[in-house]
Length: 141
Image (cartoon, rainbow, N blue to C red; front, side, top):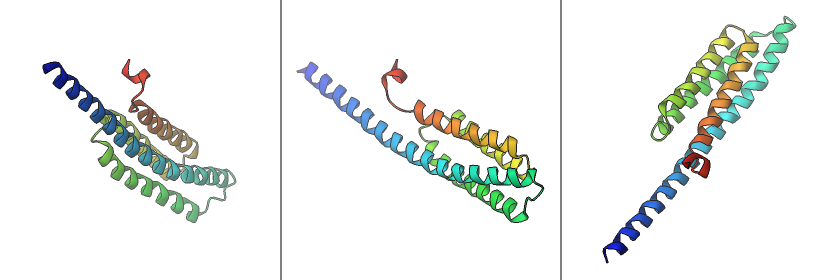
């Protein structure tokens, strides 16, 4: 009788862990997908601004639009970070935040090559923590 209760308790705990894993993965993937979409827009704008800057034709409108998009990305990330902080390592989130701040500063300083590197770094860290948090055999063992 005692063994039966223990087995039922273990099964309930395992089911709870699996359900929580699905919920956290859903939130992580949704957040990463939204940030990645914004990063793709920014990537195109950086490429355009880089080309215009090389041709000495960089318009203030392009520059302001790019700065506005990055500012919106930073605000969106801060909102997502508050949700993700409940179940993702803070160190991982901080790496993404630092990369976004560097991206913003490089765009303000018109350093578009460095901005492209920062944008790629943000994508790397986003994908890294999304994959790290998934429950699979590689992460268990």
